[in-house]
Image (cartoon, rainbow, N blue to C red; front, top):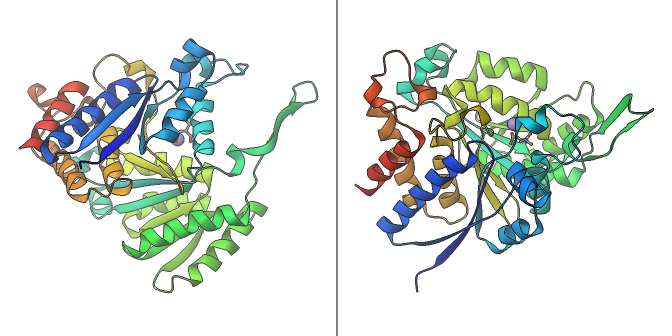
Length: 361
Ligand code: IPM
Ligand code: MN
């Protein structure tokens, strides 16, 4: 009997709905071509959910995710909240609570360079041409979740707390080392162990996990230095393992290597559930204009097929179609330049259509 894959789709805010519509379109193409049964169910999250239910992550959405085999996520965020530091309910809480509730403790963010897009990067071609790195960002600990987080002294003092347990560092590190074993066998662990206690525990624990992987070469870098080295010699990195906030910052930085943050997919995994999303945010200014790049979302499909469903051939078909789209000269606005002919610049929906055609043929 044909296996049914249940996929929860959480479009969220800004360009989220447009790009997830393309990832669904691409999965429908894959199901038609390869004979799979993907069933999609939509849920509310972020500002869209606050408007309808006053809750950035309604219980119904969480239940939907728990009942599904994988989650496809768009983006959350709205300037209405960004410009109001006093807002108690915020769209981002929806995503953070979802990560925590589903125990998605490792976020995988691969960065690759497409030869035809190298000129988009502010970095020199010869530095980036061999870049193939993967950031493993711890996703459910650190300063994002530690308690207390509050105001005191009548609101004039603010406190956030960074907490890491050894077990949390271990499980993220194991994922990084396991992935490194299937790649170039190098792990760079990033911390701030010269200043932070959590980082000293981080460094010690990662060193202990490394003992079980004698084939992998482990290097430690302080985060300030890592920020510099990623730009100076990005091709030297294989797997970068780091804590939650450092990973948030370093992956935006690393995305400039690829030329546009719109190209990059991610997977957030745990022991039981997995969520897939482009690494870009809601980009509200572009919402509804059919100009957002859906490639990050579409490549997130490929990660889902590989990691959650073990459909390698189908994942490769998506990746191959994206490569062909680019090498045939098609561009979305963010990856076009002055030499791109107008007829080659496609909208969000047309990009999804074109990539679907490449997959099918
Ligand atoms: C990301 C985003 C989120 C984060 C926000 C939207 C909460 O920036 O996924 O990188 O900070 O983790
Ligand atoms: Mn981020």
